[in-house]
Amino acid sequence: MSNPSIFSSIDAYIARCIMLSEADYAYFHSQLSVKNYKKKSRLLSAGEVCTFEGFINKGCCRVYYLNANGNEVDLYFGIEEWWVSDLASFSQQKPSNLFIETLEDTELIFISYEAKERLFKKIPSFDRMFRLMVQRTHETLMKRLLSTYSEPAEERYLAFVNRYPAIVQRVPQHLIAAYLGITPEFLSKIRSKLKSKNK
Amino acid sequence: MSNPSIFSSIDAYIARCIMLSEADYAYFHSQLSVKNYKKKSRLLSAGEVCTFEGFINKGCCRVYYLNANGNEVDLYFGIEEWWVSDLASFSQQKPSNLFIETLEDTELIFISYEAKERLFKKIPSFDRMFRLMVQRTHETLMKRLLSTYSEPAEERYLAFVNRYPAIVQRVPQHLIAAYLGITPEFLSKIRSKLKSKNK
DNA sequence: CGGCCGCATTGAAGTAGATTAAGAAGTAAT
DNA sequence: ATTACTTCTTAATCTACTTCAATGCGGCCG
Image (cartoon, rainbow over all chains, first blue to last red; front, side, top):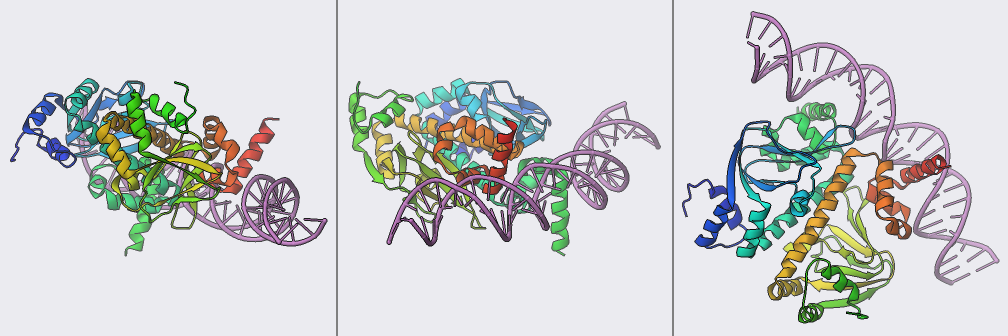
Protein backbone atom coordinates (compact mmCIF):
# COMPACT_ATOMS: atom_id res chain seq x y z
CA MET A 1 0.00 0.00 0.00
CA SER A 2 1.77 3.18 -1.14
CA ASN A 3 0.32 5.77 1.17
CA PRO A 4 1.12 9.41 0.64
CA SER A 5 -1.47 10.53 3.18
CA ILE A 6 -0.80 12.44 6.35
CA PHE A 7 -1.60 9.24 8.25
CA SER A 8 0.97 7.01 6.58
CA SER A 9 3.35 7.17 9.52
CA ILE A 10 0.77 6.35 12.18
CA ASP A 11 -0.74 3.61 9.99
CA ALA A 12 2.66 1.97 9.70
CA TYR A 13 3.00 2.19 13.47
CA ILE A 14 -0.38 0.52 14.02
CA ALA A 15 0.34 -2.16 11.45
CA ARG A 16 3.32 -3.31 13.49
CA CYS A 17 0.92 -4.30 16.31
CA ILE A 18 -2.40 -5.34 14.84
CA MET A 19 -4.01 -6.19 11.48
CA LEU A 20 -6.75 -3.88 10.31
CA SER A 21 -9.01 -3.81 7.23
CA GLU A 22 -9.19 -0.79 4.94
CA ALA A 23 -12.53 0.06 6.51
CA ASP A 24 -11.00 -0.06 9.97
CA TYR A 25 -8.28 2.33 8.89
CA ALA A 26 -10.89 4.69 7.44
CA TYR A 27 -12.78 4.69 10.73
CA PHE A 28 -9.55 5.10 12.67
CA HIS A 29 -8.62 8.16 10.59
CA SER A 30 -12.06 9.65 11.14
CA GLN A 31 -11.33 9.69 14.88
CA LEU A 32 -8.06 11.59 14.56
CA SER A 33 -7.18 15.22 14.18
CA VAL A 34 -3.99 16.89 13.05
CA LYS A 35 -2.46 20.09 14.35
CA ASN A 36 0.71 22.08 13.78
CA TYR A 37 2.61 23.90 16.50
CA LYS A 38 5.43 26.37 16.59
CA LYS A 39 8.56 25.64 18.59
CA LYS A 40 8.11 26.15 22.37
CA SER A 41 4.35 25.67 22.27
CA ARG A 42 2.81 24.33 25.45
CA LEU A 43 0.60 21.28 24.82
CA LEU A 44 -0.19 20.47 28.44
CA SER A 45 0.39 22.17 31.79
CA ALA A 46 0.27 20.71 35.28
CA GLY A 47 -3.19 21.16 36.75
CA GLU A 48 -5.00 20.59 33.47
CA VAL A 49 -6.64 17.32 32.51
CA CYS A 50 -4.75 15.75 29.61
CA THR A 51 -7.29 15.52 26.80
CA PHE A 52 -5.22 13.71 24.22
CA GLU A 53 -2.70 11.17 23.19
CA GLY A 54 -0.54 12.74 20.51
CA PHE A 55 1.47 10.94 17.85
CA ILE A 56 4.40 12.98 16.55
CA ASN A 57 4.25 13.09 12.79
CA LYS A 58 7.07 15.58 12.49
CA GLY A 59 9.00 17.47 15.14
CA CYS A 60 10.16 17.06 18.71
CA CYS A 61 8.57 17.39 22.16
CA ARG A 62 9.52 17.06 25.79
CA VAL A 63 7.42 15.79 28.68
CA TYR A 64 8.57 17.09 32.03
CA TYR A 65 7.75 17.55 35.67
CA LEU A 66 8.28 20.59 37.87
CA ASN A 67 9.39 19.51 41.34
CA ALA A 68 9.00 21.24 44.70
CA ASN A 69 12.32 23.07 44.33
CA GLY A 70 11.26 24.48 40.99
CA ASN A 71 13.56 22.21 39.02
CA GLU A 72 12.38 20.62 35.82
CA VAL A 73 12.86 16.88 35.45
CA ASP A 74 12.45 15.55 31.94
CA LEU A 75 10.46 12.36 31.74
CA TYR A 76 11.12 11.75 28.09
CA PHE A 77 11.67 13.34 24.72
CA GLY A 78 9.63 12.38 21.71
CA ILE A 79 10.51 12.64 18.05
CA GLU A 80 8.79 11.20 14.98
CA GLU A 81 6.67 8.09 15.76
CA TRP A 82 6.55 8.73 19.51
CA TRP A 83 3.41 9.32 21.51
CA VAL A 84 3.18 12.17 23.98
CA SER A 85 0.55 12.26 26.70
CA ASP A 86 0.11 12.00 30.43
CA LEU A 87 -1.51 8.60 30.47
CA ALA A 88 -2.51 8.75 34.13
CA SER A 89 -4.30 12.05 33.63
CA PHE A 90 -5.77 11.05 30.28
CA SER A 91 -7.13 7.66 31.25
CA GLN A 92 -8.58 8.77 34.58
CA GLN A 93 -9.52 12.25 33.38
CA LYS A 94 -7.93 13.87 36.41
CA PRO A 95 -5.51 16.82 36.62
CA SER A 96 -2.00 16.18 35.40
CA ASN A 97 1.32 16.86 37.16
CA LEU A 98 3.19 17.14 33.90
CA PHE A 99 4.05 19.66 31.24
CA ILE A 100 4.39 18.89 27.55
CA GLU A 101 5.93 21.29 25.10
CA THR A 102 7.41 21.34 21.63
CA LEU A 103 11.14 21.77 21.14
CA GLU A 104 10.78 22.31 17.38
CA ASP A 105 7.95 23.17 15.01
CA THR A 106 5.85 20.04 15.39
CA GLU A 107 2.98 18.27 13.62
CA LEU A 108 0.87 16.12 15.92
CA ILE A 109 -1.89 13.59 15.30
CA PHE A 110 -4.34 13.70 18.17
CA ILE A 111 -6.72 11.18 19.55
CA SER A 112 -9.16 12.39 22.19
CA TYR A 113 -10.52 10.46 25.15
CA GLU A 114 -13.93 10.03 23.55
CA ALA A 115 -12.46 9.07 20.19
CA LYS A 116 -10.33 6.44 21.87
CA GLU A 117 -13.35 4.99 23.66
CA ARG A 118 -15.27 4.87 20.37
CA LEU A 119 -12.31 3.15 18.81
CA PHE A 120 -12.23 0.50 21.53
CA LYS A 121 -15.92 -0.13 21.03
CA LYS A 122 -15.84 -0.32 17.25
CA ILE A 123 -12.49 -2.08 16.81
CA PRO A 124 -11.73 -4.22 19.85
CA SER A 125 -8.20 -5.06 18.78
CA PHE A 126 -7.25 -1.50 19.64
CA ASP A 127 -7.68 -2.47 23.27
CA ARG A 128 -4.89 -4.93 22.71
CA MET A 129 -2.76 -2.46 20.82
CA PHE A 130 -2.88 0.10 23.59
CA ARG A 131 -2.21 -2.57 26.18
CA LEU A 132 0.92 -3.56 24.28
CA MET A 133 1.89 0.08 23.98
CA VAL A 134 1.60 0.64 27.73
CA GLN A 135 3.47 -2.55 28.45
CA ARG A 136 6.36 -1.40 26.31
CA THR A 137 6.43 2.01 27.97
CA HIS A 138 6.31 0.29 31.31
CA GLU A 139 9.29 -1.87 30.45
CA THR A 140 11.31 1.15 29.34
CA LEU A 141 10.45 3.01 32.51
CA MET A 142 11.46 0.06 34.65
CA LYS A 143 14.83 -0.23 32.96
CA ARG A 144 15.38 3.44 33.50
CA LEU A 145 14.50 3.21 37.18
CA LEU A 146 16.89 0.31 37.63
CA SER A 147 19.71 2.05 35.82
CA THR A 148 19.15 5.16 37.94
CA TYR A 149 19.63 3.07 41.04
CA SER A 150 22.51 1.03 39.66
CA GLU A 151 24.68 3.18 37.45
CA PRO A 152 26.53 6.46 37.93
CA ALA A 153 25.61 9.42 35.75
CA GLU A 154 28.41 8.85 33.26
CA GLU A 155 27.18 5.39 32.32
CA ARG A 156 23.59 6.54 32.17
CA TYR A 157 24.65 9.28 29.80
CA LEU A 158 26.52 6.85 27.57
CA ALA A 159 23.54 4.51 27.56
CA PHE A 160 21.26 7.40 26.60
CA VAL A 161 23.52 8.48 23.74
CA ASN A 162 23.74 4.91 22.58
CA ARG A 163 20.00 4.29 22.75
CA TYR A 164 18.70 7.61 21.44
CA PRO A 165 21.35 8.96 19.07
CA ALA A 166 18.73 10.81 17.04
CA ILE A 167 17.43 12.61 20.11
CA VAL A 168 20.87 13.67 21.31
CA GLN A 169 21.27 15.58 18.05
CA ARG A 170 18.06 17.53 18.52
CA VAL A 171 17.68 18.19 22.23
CA PRO A 172 19.85 20.75 24.08
CA GLN A 173 22.22 19.32 26.64
CA HIS A 174 20.76 20.96 29.69
CA LEU A 175 17.52 19.09 28.99
CA ILE A 176 19.35 15.80 28.65
CA ALA A 177 20.92 16.58 32.03
CA ALA A 178 17.42 17.10 33.42
CA TYR A 179 16.47 13.72 31.99
CA LEU A 180 19.47 12.02 33.57
CA GLY A 181 18.70 13.66 36.89
CA ILE A 182 21.90 15.70 37.06
CA THR A 183 22.84 19.36 36.63
CA PRO A 184 23.92 20.76 33.24
CA GLU A 185 27.29 21.65 34.80
CA PHE A 186 27.94 18.10 35.81
CA LEU A 187 26.93 16.74 32.41
CA SER A 188 29.36 19.17 30.86
CA LYS A 189 32.09 17.81 33.11
CA ILE A 190 31.23 14.25 32.15
CA ARG A 191 31.41 15.15 28.48
CA SER A 192 34.77 16.87 28.73
CA LYS A 193 36.13 13.92 30.70
CA LEU A 194 34.89 11.53 28.00
CA LYS A 195 36.44 13.68 25.29
CA SER A 196 39.87 13.67 26.90
CA LYS A 197 39.58 9.91 27.40
CA ASN A 198 38.93 9.27 23.72
CA LYS A 199 42.08 11.02 22.59
CA MET B 1 -22.21 -13.52 47.34
CA SER B 2 -20.62 -14.84 50.52
CA ASN B 3 -17.51 -16.52 49.22
CA PRO B 4 -15.42 -18.63 51.55
CA SER B 5 -13.41 -20.06 48.63
CA ILE B 6 -9.70 -19.76 48.09
CA PHE B 7 -10.48 -17.34 45.26
CA SER B 8 -12.51 -14.85 47.28
CA SER B 9 -9.66 -12.35 47.49
CA ILE B 10 -8.81 -12.40 43.79
CA ASP B 11 -12.50 -12.28 42.86
CA ALA B 12 -12.94 -9.16 44.95
CA TYR B 13 -9.93 -7.67 43.22
CA ILE B 14 -11.38 -8.41 39.77
CA ALA B 15 -14.77 -7.10 40.72
CA ARG B 16 -13.28 -3.69 41.40
CA CYS B 17 -12.36 -3.43 37.69
CA ILE B 18 -14.91 -5.36 35.63
CA MET B 19 -18.30 -7.05 35.97
CA LEU B 20 -18.37 -10.80 35.42
CA SER B 21 -21.14 -13.40 35.46
CA GLU B 22 -21.02 -16.47 37.70
CA ALA B 23 -20.10 -18.53 34.65
CA ASP B 24 -17.25 -16.17 33.84
CA TYR B 25 -15.90 -16.54 37.37
CA ALA B 26 -16.09 -20.30 37.08
CA TYR B 27 -14.10 -20.23 33.86
CA PHE B 28 -11.67 -17.78 35.37
CA HIS B 29 -11.06 -20.08 38.34
CA SER B 30 -10.53 -23.03 36.02
CA GLN B 31 -7.55 -21.19 34.51
CA LEU B 32 -5.84 -20.58 37.84
CA SER B 33 -3.62 -22.66 40.06
CA VAL B 34 -2.69 -22.24 43.69
CA LYS B 35 0.65 -22.99 45.31
CA ASN B 36 2.20 -22.59 48.73
CA TYR B 37 5.81 -21.62 49.32
CA LYS B 38 8.10 -21.54 52.32
CA LYS B 39 9.86 -18.32 53.28
CA LYS B 40 12.87 -17.50 51.06
CA SER B 41 11.61 -19.56 48.10
CA ARG B 42 12.78 -18.38 44.71
CA LEU B 43 9.88 -17.90 42.27
CA LEU B 44 11.89 -16.46 39.39
CA SER B 45 15.58 -15.99 38.61
CA ALA B 46 17.23 -13.72 36.05
CA GLY B 47 17.80 -15.63 32.83
CA GLU B 48 14.56 -17.61 33.08
CA VAL B 49 11.41 -16.78 31.17
CA CYS B 50 8.73 -15.62 33.58
CA THR B 51 5.90 -18.12 33.14
CA PHE B 52 3.33 -16.58 35.42
CA GLU B 53 1.56 -13.67 36.95
CA GLY B 54 1.06 -14.40 40.61
CA PHE B 55 -1.57 -12.96 42.91
CA ILE B 56 -0.57 -13.02 46.58
CA ASN B 57 -3.35 -14.62 48.58
CA LYS B 58 -1.33 -14.68 51.79
CA GLY B 59 2.27 -13.74 52.47
CA CYS B 60 4.94 -11.41 51.22
CA CYS B 61 7.35 -11.29 48.25
CA ARG B 62 10.05 -9.10 46.84
CA VAL B 63 10.91 -8.42 43.22
CA TYR B 64 14.49 -7.32 42.70
CA TYR B 65 17.27 -6.75 40.26
CA LEU B 66 20.94 -7.69 40.58
CA ASN B 67 23.13 -4.97 39.09
CA ALA B 68 26.60 -5.13 37.60
CA ASN B 69 28.27 -4.46 40.97
CA GLY B 70 26.41 -7.33 42.55
CA ASN B 71 24.06 -5.06 44.48
CA GLU B 72 20.41 -5.93 44.77
CA VAL B 73 17.90 -3.20 43.94
CA ASP B 74 14.37 -3.89 45.09
CA LEU B 75 11.75 -3.02 42.53
CA TYR B 76 8.82 -3.58 44.80
CA PHE B 77 7.44 -5.61 47.64
CA GLY B 78 4.12 -7.38 47.44
CA ILE B 79 1.77 -8.41 50.17
CA GLU B 80 -1.82 -9.65 50.06
CA GLU B 81 -3.69 -8.55 46.89
CA TRP B 82 -0.54 -7.63 44.97
CA TRP B 83 0.59 -9.23 41.74
CA VAL B 84 4.15 -10.39 41.27
CA SER B 85 5.62 -11.04 37.85
CA ASP B 86 8.12 -9.73 35.37
CA LEU B 87 5.65 -8.39 32.88
CA ALA B 88 8.23 -7.73 30.16
CA SER B 89 9.50 -11.28 30.33
CA PHE B 90 6.04 -12.79 30.71
CA SER B 91 4.32 -10.96 27.89
CA GLN B 92 7.15 -11.34 25.42
CA GLN B 93 8.22 -14.77 26.65
CA LYS B 94 11.85 -13.75 26.78
CA PRO B 95 14.43 -14.15 29.57
CA SER B 96 13.93 -11.98 32.62
CA ASN B 97 16.45 -9.73 34.38
CA LEU B 98 14.65 -10.00 37.67
CA PHE B 99 14.45 -12.20 40.72
CA ILE B 100 11.31 -12.87 42.71
CA GLU B 101 11.35 -14.50 46.11
CA THR B 102 9.14 -14.93 49.14
CA LEU B 103 9.92 -13.10 52.37
CA GLU B 104 7.38 -15.12 54.36
CA ASP B 105 5.49 -18.37 53.87
CA THR B 106 3.32 -17.39 50.94
CA GLU B 107 0.23 -18.64 49.09
CA LEU B 108 0.10 -17.59 45.45
CA ILE B 109 -2.58 -17.82 42.79
CA PHE B 110 -0.95 -18.33 39.43
CA ILE B 111 -2.06 -17.56 35.94
CA SER B 112 0.09 -18.91 33.11
CA TYR B 113 0.75 -17.29 29.76
CA GLU B 114 -1.52 -19.73 27.92
CA ALA B 115 -4.27 -19.44 30.51
CA LYS B 116 -4.14 -15.66 30.20
CA GLU B 117 -4.45 -15.87 26.43
CA ARG B 118 -7.42 -18.24 26.76
CA LEU B 119 -8.95 -15.79 29.21
CA PHE B 120 -8.55 -12.90 26.78
CA LYS B 121 -10.20 -14.95 24.07
CA LYS B 122 -13.11 -16.20 26.13
CA ILE B 123 -13.76 -13.10 28.23
CA PRO B 124 -12.66 -10.00 26.32
CA SER B 125 -13.16 -7.64 29.23
CA PHE B 126 -10.05 -9.17 30.81
CA ASP B 127 -8.07 -7.39 28.12
CA ARG B 128 -9.38 -4.18 29.59
CA MET B 129 -8.72 -5.25 33.15
CA PHE B 130 -5.09 -6.04 32.49
CA ARG B 131 -4.69 -2.81 30.56
CA LEU B 132 -5.97 -0.89 33.57
CA MET B 133 -3.68 -2.88 35.83
CA VAL B 134 -0.61 -2.04 33.74
CA GLN B 135 -1.65 1.59 33.56
CA ARG B 136 -1.83 1.80 37.32
CA THR B 137 1.55 0.14 37.73
CA HIS B 138 2.93 2.49 35.15
CA GLU B 139 1.65 5.51 37.02
CA THR B 140 3.18 4.29 40.28
CA LEU B 141 6.50 3.66 38.61
CA MET B 142 6.49 7.12 37.06
CA LYS B 143 5.83 8.80 40.38
CA ARG B 144 8.67 6.83 41.91
CA LEU B 145 11.05 7.81 39.13
CA LEU B 146 10.14 11.46 39.55
CA SER B 147 10.53 11.37 43.32
CA THR B 148 13.92 9.69 42.92
CA TYR B 149 15.04 12.60 40.79
CA SER B 150 13.41 15.25 42.94
CA GLU B 151 13.60 14.30 46.58
CA PRO B 152 16.41 13.38 48.96
CA ALA B 153 16.43 9.95 50.57
CA GLU B 154 14.85 11.13 53.81
CA GLU B 155 11.71 12.38 52.10
CA ARG B 156 11.50 9.29 49.93
CA TYR B 157 11.69 7.17 53.04
CA LEU B 158 8.95 9.13 54.76
CA ALA B 159 6.79 8.88 51.65
CA PHE B 160 7.36 5.13 51.56
CA VAL B 161 6.43 4.69 55.22
CA ASN B 162 3.37 6.83 54.69
CA ARG B 163 2.25 4.99 51.58
CA TYR B 164 3.06 1.42 52.55
CA PRO B 165 2.76 1.23 56.36
CA ALA B 166 1.83 -2.45 56.21
CA ILE B 167 4.93 -3.30 54.21
CA VAL B 168 7.28 -1.41 56.52
CA GLN B 169 6.16 -3.73 59.32
CA ARG B 170 6.98 -6.89 57.39
CA VAL B 171 10.07 -6.15 55.32
CA PRO B 172 13.57 -5.89 56.85
CA GLN B 173 15.14 -2.46 56.71
CA HIS B 174 18.09 -3.29 54.52
CA LEU B 175 15.62 -4.29 51.80
CA ILE B 176 13.75 -1.04 52.15
CA ALA B 177 17.11 0.70 51.76
CA ALA B 178 17.65 -1.29 48.56
CA TYR B 179 14.24 -0.10 47.39
CA LEU B 180 15.04 3.52 48.13
CA GLY B 181 18.38 3.20 46.35
CA ILE B 182 20.54 3.89 49.41
CA THR B 183 22.75 1.82 51.71
CA PRO B 184 21.35 0.21 54.87
CA GLU B 185 23.81 2.29 56.90
CA PHE B 186 22.47 5.52 55.53
CA LEU B 187 18.86 4.49 56.11
CA SER B 188 19.78 3.72 59.68
CA LYS B 189 21.21 7.21 60.03
CA ILE B 190 18.09 8.76 58.55
CA ARG B 191 15.94 6.85 61.00
CA SER B 192 17.96 7.84 64.05
CA LYS B 193 17.89 11.44 62.89
CA LEU B 194 14.11 11.28 62.54
CA LYS B 195 13.78 9.71 65.97
CA SER B 196 15.76 12.46 67.68
CA LYS B 197 13.72 15.07 65.79
CA ASN B 198 10.43 13.69 67.06
CA LYS B 199 11.39 13.99 70.72
C1' DC C 1 22.83 -23.71 77.39
C1' DG C 2 26.31 -21.57 74.22
C1' DG C 3 27.59 -20.15 69.67
C1' DC C 4 26.92 -18.04 65.59
C1' DC C 5 24.62 -15.66 62.03
C1' DG C 6 21.67 -12.13 60.09
C1' DC C 7 20.32 -7.55 61.00
C1' DA C 8 20.67 -2.87 62.78
C1' DT C 9 23.61 0.90 64.50
C1' DT C 10 27.52 4.25 64.79
C1' DG C 11 31.56 6.76 63.40
C1' DA C 12 35.49 8.24 60.35
C1' DA C 13 37.00 9.08 55.90
C1' DG C 14 36.09 9.32 50.94
C1' DT C 15 33.42 10.51 46.56
C1' DA C 16 29.74 11.65 43.18
C1' DG C 17 27.36 15.19 42.20
C1' DA C 18 25.18 20.06 43.65
C1' DT C 19 25.67 24.91 44.02
C1' DT C 20 27.40 29.23 42.94
C1' DA C 21 29.54 32.28 40.06
C1' DA C 22 31.64 33.75 35.98
C1' DG C 23 32.72 33.87 31.21
C1' DA C 24 32.61 32.37 26.07
C1' DA C 25 30.22 31.61 21.98
C1' DG C 26 26.28 31.24 19.16
C1' DT C 27 21.71 32.99 17.71
C1' DA C 28 17.65 35.92 17.63
C1' DA C 29 15.61 40.36 18.10
C1' DT C 30 15.95 45.49 17.59
C1' DA D 1 25.74 46.87 14.87
C1' DT D 2 24.21 46.23 19.43
C1' DT D 3 21.74 44.16 22.74
C1' DA D 4 19.96 40.33 24.88
C1' DC D 5 19.06 35.61 25.40
C1' DT D 6 20.27 30.75 25.26
C1' DT D 7 23.57 27.21 25.52
C1' DC D 8 27.74 25.36 27.09
C1' DT D 9 31.95 25.37 29.84
C1' DT D 10 35.30 25.75 33.82
C1' DA D 11 36.54 26.17 38.54
C1' DA D 12 35.92 26.54 43.82
C1' DT D 13 33.38 25.19 47.49
C1' DC D 14 29.86 22.35 49.71
C1' DT D 15 26.84 18.20 50.91
C1' DA D 16 24.26 13.94 50.52
C1' DC D 17 25.49 9.69 50.41
C1' DT D 18 29.02 5.67 50.23
C1' DT D 19 32.52 2.68 52.00
C1' DC D 20 34.78 0.49 55.47
C1' DA D 21 35.27 -1.10 59.99
C1' DA D 22 33.72 -2.02 64.57
C1' DT D 23 30.04 -3.04 67.86
C1' DG D 24 25.70 -4.79 69.68
C1' DC D 25 21.90 -7.78 69.79
C1' DG D 26 17.96 -10.79 69.16
C1' DG D 27 16.92 -15.47 67.09
C1' DC D 28 17.73 -19.97 65.87
C1' DC D 29 20.10 -24.41 65.77
C1' DG D 30 23.28 -27.63 67.62
